[in-house]
Amino acid sequence: MSNTMKRWEIPSYGLDKLSLNTVERPTPRAGEILVEVDAVALNYRDLVVAADGMGADLAFPFTPASDMAGRVVALGEGVTRFAVGDRVISTYIANWVDGAPLSWADSPTQGGPIPGMLAQYVTTPADWCVLAPKSLTPEQASTLPVAALTAWMALVEEGDLHAGETVVVQGTGGVSLFAIQIAAQSGAQVIVTTSSDEKIAQAKALGATHGINRNTHPDWQEEVRRLTNGRGAEHILEMAGGANMRRSVQAVAPGGRISVIGLLESDEVTLPIMEMLGSRASVVAIAVGPRRVLEDLVRAVDTRSMKPVIDATYPFDQVPQAFEHLKRGAFGKVVVKVGQA
Image (cartoon, rainbow, N blue to C red; front, side):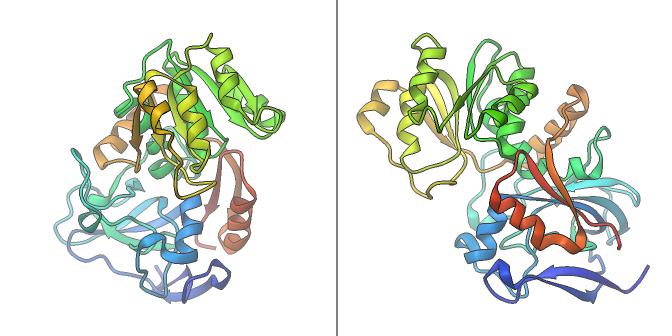
């Protein structure tokens, strides 16, 4: 094993400053594992963190991206959680094992402010990883820590999803496509809102029941009401923020649930108070989830034969191109295959 490795870094804020550098391969300290990275899945959050830190102060040079799948190649002193050769995936929120969320100060996130995963090797506390699903490739497994876990938290862990309920999924990014599969496998009716008929057809192939083209039906909430005979949807995954929140309130069923997840349009929401009071709905912020729930999700993936949707896979030397793909928009996840090339 060489004493050096390749790692993507930015010297200051700005994804345009990304460079692939040769650095010393890290050595695991007590309680840590050394992971040979096989694949890294990119999230929209990675773009924001690289641009301005997303509210956190980054230590430069900084390596982006939080979601990793790899193999344990060395153990630090005292590690019993894993053995050399185990396939693992990273968690996203450090120190949040189970129970109520910790404060931001007590639970920093991987990929900012904690250095990220776009490297051939990473050291990480053993407590910040879980065993990877047996049924997925490394590329597929790398998509679980943020996107899949967010959808699972919104619908299953906290949403108490039941068969026969209606779920509105906004867009066709990673979280949304996992949500379609989870909801459909649970016996729910799934309505997807997106920007093209082609994406609607692809979403239906994954299990969506209905699709609403936002370009032809910008007031998509009216279509949701029509498709549910005026009742609305029990679960809405709010992915855009801004004025879109009003539409979600108008589309939710009495006593339903709006899970606030994304900020694709704005990092603020416009909330109509009287309509909100009239709906008696719950508005809940979903900030991914703890390690225990990720372990539950891994078991469910193997049991349900859930397959992540990957729009494109890029080699390790084409990370800038992978981020450009993410900026353009993707049907599912954009993944970097790391390897040792």
